[in-house]
Length: 453
Image 1 (cartoon, rainbow, N blue to C red):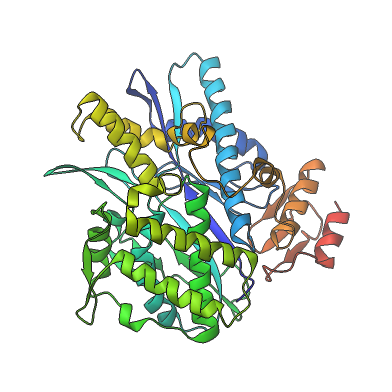
Image 2 (cartoon, helix red, strand yellow; image 1 turned 60 degrees about the vertical axis):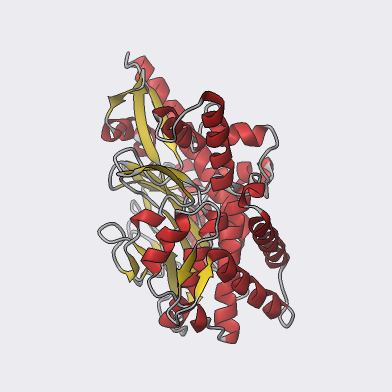
């Protein structure tokens, strides 16, 4: 598929502290956070005028699911818009706490683990053709997803029985299977549940749940665009890298994550030993050969250049990618602070820095401090993010949903929406439209429904 639907679901960590101690439980914080949301839709699960879904997930985690996007740039801008929307809710909740005389500061983190060792996800969604052999896609994608963490990881100070260590990926130690329909009990690399949110006769939705939540726009864009390109190679040319199959993907993903030099090798099913860098280089080389015989979009060309840049940097020294990769930027911040103050890696102040990198509030986020000083590469302009906060993508089904929600709210109508349905509850016939095609952004039935509001 040259034109594909992309989506990202981001779960956020929340806490409320006073003087370094927990002031409210996550559940209590979530109630304040979603009070405004409940005014919008009388529940903690709503679709927004920009086509996105915002809801409270298991464990009191706010979750923002982007609308359907047909480019990597669009899905990253809408993922960043989600940060801003959740930040606004946080500011409103903070004001409400102070009005009620409750001391404490709310913090929201775009990361994947908490201090108790729980993990929450950042899930990528890629629309694929129904005819595709799922096992064929997985056979190629698993080695790609396991090895891409060397440029897509978010980094973490991991406390172990043998002491603290810095890892490349936050999710790597929480994955237990390659394929599974579960998401929490036994987290897989790829979730195999067949839930396309579209015409099930035509499409499948590839649900990747192994990735870290990225603060870096550069890493986020490359993560989505490179995966989309690998999928296209499989779909259009039947490219299957059977010679890259891992002997044990779960052991491999941990071994790669635990080596910040990116030199550790992992065992393949055929007995070979390769570094993650070697595996990524093989994927990139095949993508370049594919591009020699297929028309590439501007984004695909950009992804190839960024991919090459990252692998060249990692070969030279992974720490040269501090402007591009979250795990490198955070690692160097922590190491510089640790050396300056003579601290062991297990010092609680470094664990706090780890968290602060992922804060979405710009005034307290270490990532946004770096970005404000022009120390992180960007792929988006602020205008693109601001537009995504209020406006749905105009070239996918999300446009129809966004327009319907905006007009229904303006008219104070009772309505229900999900990914495929638009319904007027207070109409005598409870008028409803089924939108099964995620690429269709103009629909006479929806226009008539909106006109009837």
